[in-house]
Image (cartoon, rainbow, N blue to C red):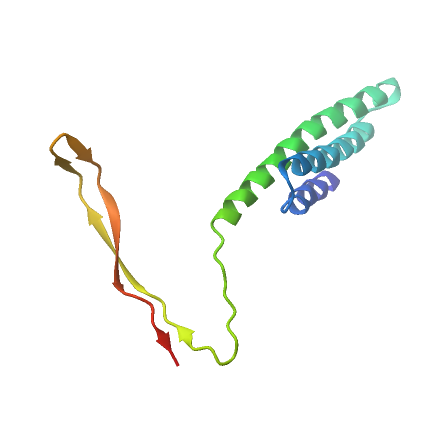
Length: 129
């Protein structure tokens, strides 16, 4: 349970970080969680060895999770739309009407053009009061 919480925190806390920060934070949280789990599972003279093994495995897994979180947030940031806040007296802007049309595969001379969607603006956005 502790490892799950620490892993979740490593993903949440690295969302706005650089790649190095994401890897560093993920591996340090993973190493700490792994060392704790390894220490708990080890017994007697093997406790130090299992603590070190847990720390190493946790650091590797934490770095992978930190990397996955960083890449996931980069993709999410790339698709983020900008929400424009207007002042009170500014008129609103209507959404454009767009139609999606399937264009079948075709051959034009020496070119083969694969089937694809084409988007046509039927009505542009307009100001309204």
